[in-house]
Length: 191
Image 1 (cartoon, rainbow, N blue to C red):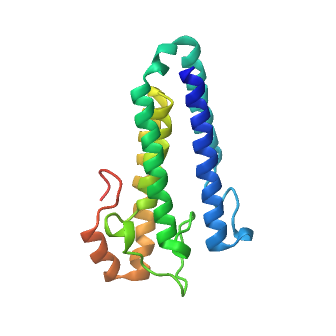
Image 2 (tube, rainbow, N blue to C red):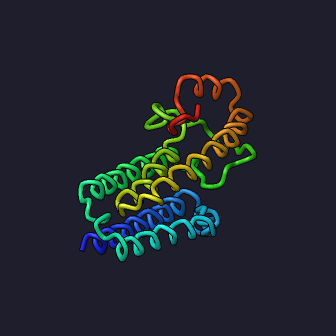
């Protein structure tokens, strides 16, 4: 029974996360500018989520007792909720400045966001996504996917953040340098 509840929670988390990402992106950037690609739904992402469900179903059949750790599953659910809140607050705070695809050129309306959650971390959207994604796997009591998601996402952000910040430094110069000195990235072990 726990496995079924976890699977439904996982499906609800995916639907709510991606549905709300779409609604916010369309609200800030226009529906015509929002696609699966612009929302970073890639083949790798779909494969990762598919692997997570495969692990979940396999463990239900082979090791059902792994899925009975209600306390662990509920911690995962809490992570999903917290990650979702952080992510959506980041998107709403940044407004039009928040994009899923890194901007490599400056636009007139481009501004450095340093208020709201951005006072405490430079990349709250990434932090929220990391907490949300790992939380989905903790919620499913998926030990393999929990470790894999954590490592893969950390590696992804360890490359993406410096790349993005290269352009932010180009756009905002010393203002961004000072901000980066004061405020942590929001991802553990990434300056």
